[in-house]
Length: 122
Image (tube, rainbow, N blue to C red; front, side, top):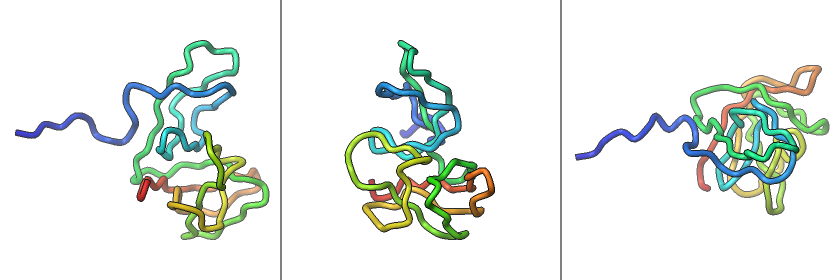
């Protein structure tokens, strides 16, 4: 007999985040998951564990790179290279690997767009 473990909307038990500052609500790729970090980790913090929301049914406003201005319906990808990826610096419209997000609302004057998180083909 099967049993529900959890609703699957977020990672569980936390991932250890590398050196740096990570702000609640920002979009990242870590440990093969695309998601929005659910707490802020400052550079001086010694407890560096946090989960990400990974569900595709929620829409998040996230900061995009300055040079990226996608249209509604465009699919976004991470730039090539290893390591953690940040939404505000490492997103691209250039097809590279698996899609990580779909644009639901265009970028505003502050550089934020509404996206749907995708975790397919990873």
